[in-house]
Image 1: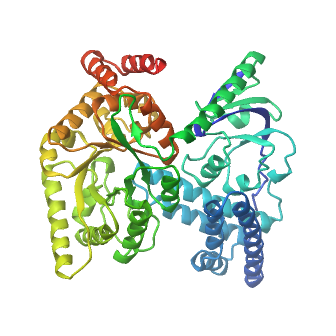
Image 2: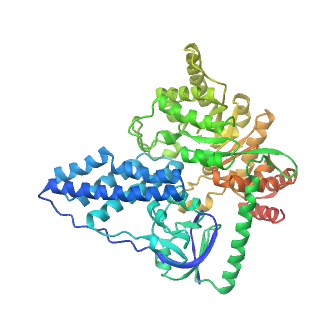
Image 3: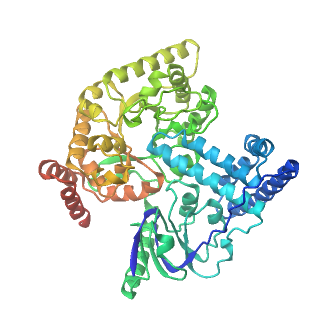
Length: 577
């Protein structure tokens, strides 16, 4: 028996034998072609065959999982039909005389490089991983036709198994026989990827970034996949198998109970009413938010509209996306965060200088204030959307009061101009993200000037602890429950409450089982999170006595010196509820 640790991407527990996906050899000789027209015809044959396959997969996925999941393959088909993508491959064949395989490889890598060159922050990294995975999936399929090599067909699995793979693609998931496949393990992958979303829809436990899984697991090894903790047990003992069967039964009972928390208000055990809202970035997230009975959208990340586009979205394009979200929420509030990008790389249409430390450079509101027309266009689109429902606009990466005042002045100017033009508009709450220590320590001053506030704990923790959460070398210093972080959070919440303003929190802490009791005890009013977590956190909050949680907060703030001490106190608290 040995264990492998990864990251849980889809919850649940499964026990079955390992089935390793053996990737076919898709390497090719880089030959020079003489008949370029014939080579282009060969390329088009492979593209047509790939599109036909993807169309069949899409139909199957729509039938089994629904239209939303089927759209993943529609986007693959569109890319294979994209004139820019195809002409780029053709041009390489014509200009360089390379074979179709090499031209496809170079063009695909160029697309991936283009996506990566647009990435600047943590959220974008996740989106880029998703797009990169899609391009790799497409390239793999076309290459298989060019080389006449069969890809693995997971529909042939005829016994209960747990899939073990280097990476798992949406088309792999689409072929899974749900009757037999009990779980998925991959060495790579992202929690926001299309394949992960599909695994969640199928309710398949999934663990990603399981380093060493390919070499550490043999075909037919007995496996336990604990999708709750991210732990894989290879060839477990009989006692462990019995223990995990019990855990699995308990998990399924718990999941059935969560349905009872749909369409309910979020209320603590002692009757304090809070709000649980959703973080979204695209249409899929919007559907998930409404399906999970989110009480609003606590964070609409508008960056998605700009990411990977060949041009900056127009005012009308932005307005239509914002209007759709507001309309879909049907009277529930929507909080829009204005463009939050960094500038270590260029976005198409925005000229920004390179810099050595983008985390401390031109990002968030600093980009908007330095690109006046870009900012005004986004504000006009948002103001127009306000005529369809309750909205708030919050500015990211605010460090000083002066920055907020500059942003508000531009907003006021645009609103006044639109009013003169007779534009329809509703009321808008304006506010800030508290993400850096200077804004947190000036919370009492911000509270006097803004309408709304949202604490972005992901960045705030990073800046307080001076530790990049994506850098494994300092991962142990990225401590959400460090007393220093908690003292600052409490100060911010108290400062806004003094001015009668509610406080929202939208980072990972909002959906952390350990952190939620503390946040309830501090008096946080709104928790915004990934839609998958909404019912679990609503249930957890229903078990918390806010007055007792407040005592825990005071104890931690007064007496704890390390995050370990905080964790110990919180585990003791959670064991009792």
